[in-house]
Image 1 (cartoon, rainbow, N blue to C red):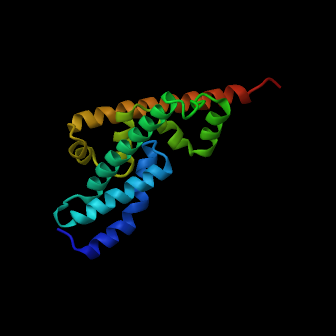
Image 2 (cartoon, rainbow, N blue to C red):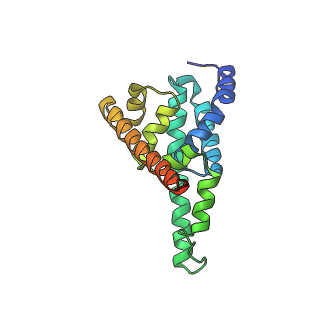
Image 3 (cartoon, one colour):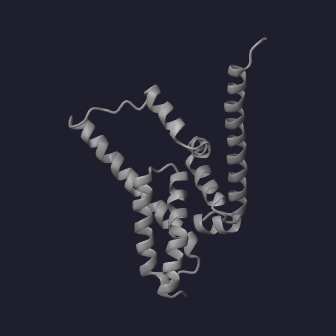
Length: 174
């Protein structure tokens, strides 16, 4: 059970990490910041009863960001079907290239993972143990360990594929 002074310290220490966690989950920065603020506000109101605040705010912020993202997608879908908005060109080569160049390699590779692998790996990268992740995400620790292994294997293949294509393009006969 924590005091309000502890919450202030917690907020200063965790807020940036919480936003980064959501960005690793492939949410845009604005959605990540909004969800982090909402989760912190909810944490403050429940502060006296929280036992693992770091895990609690990540779980809450993820759910908030997910709801926001789904709500935004539904709004765009309705606008397109109603004729109020032209469908965006999601497959533009220039947009894809800009997204790759503007994001760090880690975020680019994490975005290629299936949602469950990305979620578990983001928790892992934030320093949570398999047991803590399992408890927070309501999984078994065996499932967490397996999911992490699959995520790491997939990232390794993606990274090797990226590195392999660069060396093939850069290599030439003298």
